[in-house]
Image (tube, rainbow, N blue to C red; front, side):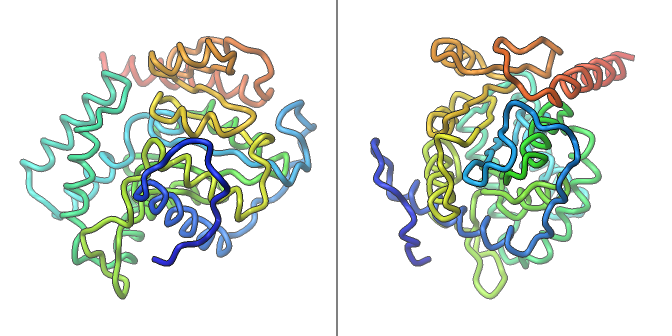
Length: 309
């Protein structure tokens, strides 16, 4: 893929593969968003933040355990197994990785890498359009009920202010785009799998959109869209996303892991935990998120109660 030339000078080092992954993801996200239907403006009262009508601001949301409970890639794997894309032993591996993610509440690099390698081998030779269609079905089957209402309310606050909202995830960009579209968001930055004539080759463009690569993707997209990162917001649960969170003027720690919680408190970032219904450690969260927090906590309590019955 030809270089896009979008990146502004970086104050820290980034691997060439991170830059390539970020540029590829930003290009895929912009192409997709240009084809999407615009989100209608809301008539709700203007919140203190985000600022209504600030066209140089946008919001970037991590997906796994920030917007959605669990990991999108693992839910996608379950859906592919149901459709006979792979065998039972592979499903057991996906199930173990998902269980670890849910219990530990953090991303394990080895588990995530294994999941990506498995996914690439599974989709090799399949058409991109086929996986997009299946992704729509899998969203309804496994993902829709796992969206955190509180985080969804935060995203809606940005949309209501007339700002663009992007998912930023290590999940395949096609699946991320499905989720973004179903949530009414602008688009998604995700890991770009190589395809030739609409067929997956089983290789990646650059590397998975994880850690520094996410920051590169956000930086590239901001440059292309004419955004002022100092006026943008970013949301994540993982310390792996500190590079992305550090890029923007309004970083939020959502359902944070231990390392991110400590980092956020040290830098006086805003926090919100929808897993327990706890109030934010900082004030200034959009009012819509307050309602979402209650809904998110209630939904989590009901789900836990059902599992125990």
